[in-house]
Length: 67
Image (cartoon, rainbow, N blue to C red; front, side, top):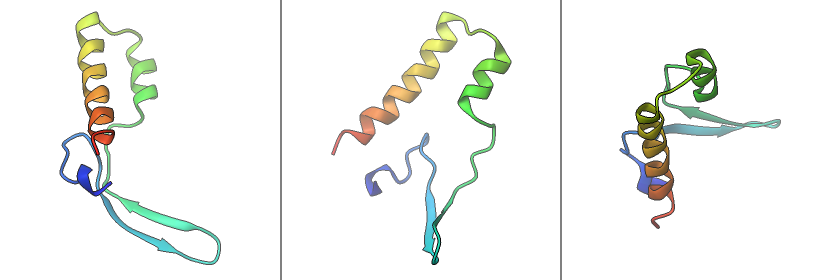
């Protein structure tokens, strides 16, 4: 996952810590809420706005698979 560092659409991991019960991952704050909630709140997207959103998501997935 280090190849994703610095990608504008991927949050960074600041650290990971383990205790007796769980693993805690500290990540960059991603303000703006959940994508699902944003879609529900908006109610509908124009084809152009939906295409922009999907283009961003597919770009990140493509980067993830480009190892």
